[in-house]
Length: 303
Ligand SMILES: NC(=O)c1ccc[n+]([C@@H]2O[C@H](COP(=O)([O-])OP(=O)(O)OC[C@H]3O[C@@H](n4cnc5c(N)ncnc54)[C@H](OP(=O)(O)O)[C@@H]3O)[C@@H](O)[C@H]2O)c1
Image (cartoon, rainbow, N blue to C red; front, side):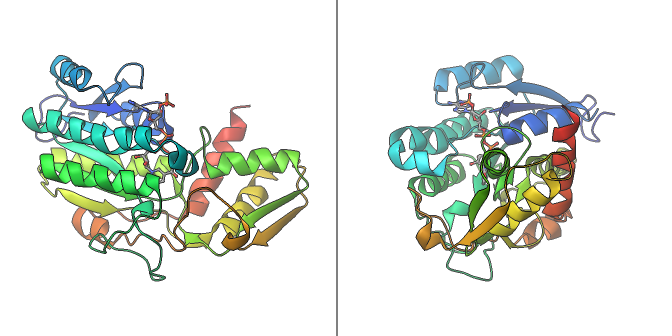
């Protein structure tokens, strides 16, 4: 099926195509006749290389670009600040400029870590940002550069992304639960886990509406439904995974963030309010618990 406004499938160029969100977007959009996908991992397109960006856009002529590339490890970012800013900020500006000069809308992902987490009730798109670490600051700078150079953008802030592969809390928790009898998890930081499958679903829904003429450019929030803690998220991971394999872990111990040292400070409550996405695009939050069950089922069925 082609889109309403196009007589052919809508061509989407995806950067960072081998990451958690990139992979899932390639897979879901690639199975949807509405789209034709150009999937580029870091080797095919390094988004810090302005010449390469221009060349690829001219060769591939996408209708939309979705940037899934990022430096995503908050603790490592404290040590690799220069690299982090180059990728999460400068490169987003380069991509934004290149897309703007060719009239290509750009969809970009950002994070709850742009906030300091002091609003217990959660954050809407207009709330003031105050990143606590290098990663959040670099992502915020990337957002600002994109706003400055390219009006036809969507910035989708998401939180606590998990999937069945790559570096994320789900995979780390599973690995530890296989090796240790006791795990600790922070129980005083609140947020909303979001499956990469769910982020891809939301991006696809936005892309379809943009392709049908919705010019609703701007910044949006999305996260899985139900506020939780890292402790309760870990508990759900262990409970679900235990249905498929015998884990070594016997005890999960709640700890305060004060007693759980990390290099990067993290927001205490990084709950994203998602009303704007619902009122603009009609996209509802899905419960992360259902997504977690589906992600783990898929993970174990592969073996
Ligand atoms: N993960 C989370 O918990 C989380 C939370 C909130 C927001 N987000 C945002 O969501 C987006 C997607 O995150 P994710 O979890 O899918 O990240 P991810 O799994 O780390 O994927 C990022 C991808 O970017 C690629 N990349 C690195 N440097 C690149 C470069 N110079 N040029 C092109 N590609 C490059 C990486 O490739 P290599 O592996 O080869 O380096 C990797 O495949 C990011 O914008 C992130 O900030 C993530």
